[in-house]
Image (cartoon, rainbow, N blue to C red):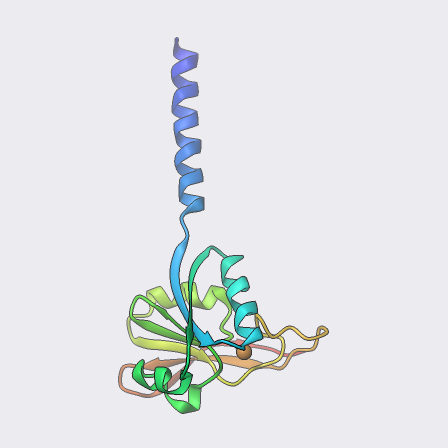
Length: 148
Ligand SMILES: [Cu+2]
């Protein structure tokens, strides 16, 4: 009797931790129809616990403008999560960390840095930074990725 109770408790525990592990984080990605690296970035997010809602836009530059992405931080795709933007090939770990940054309107990996997630090219990588846009409109460096 006692053993079966313990087993029941144990399997309940296992099931709940499995459910937690399976809980995916929703994010929407807006991109141009012909953007290949955007799709690769989506795969990177999906491999890291995100559930991506993929949107094809006809005019990315006006979309970026509408969502407050300054041109200096611009890249290819623009993702939206909890009212904040994620511009370009930002690593998934930084997208996760963004939930703790209420001082930021969004983050960006400006341009198309080689070696960033979705921009892998024969092991080459540029050094790049993830930049946060603060509510006062100024930029702050959120993370530094060294090249090699
Ligand atoms: Cu890209």
